[in-house]
Length: 143
Image (cartoon, rainbow, N blue to C red):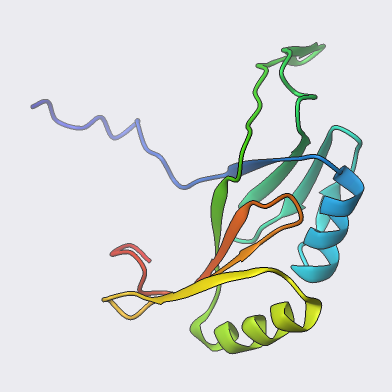
């Protein structure tokens, strides 16, 4: 086994992408229900501040399959289908307020989990059927 190259460091996950059928409906959900600040809004791509330098990208399903060259370079084409999953980190004391808020908003609830290390997860759906999770510390050894 070779020694790790310290120049090859990953400092975190920066972007997560979800693919949506109705951009306006999705933007409304992520802004109004999840209170994520929208940093860029468009018909094909909307971008949200997901905290801790994380960015949530919402792409119109099927509209980002082709490479997109511009004067700065090329963004390779990509797309996704079916219900995807992502988790948002929340403080432990925010768990019950988020649960109550989601119930008040009529968000489809999928389940809860208490993890062996003490973290808790709350699972729910966005308007496109993606499985979203709010997770408190204690879910993973590094969180």
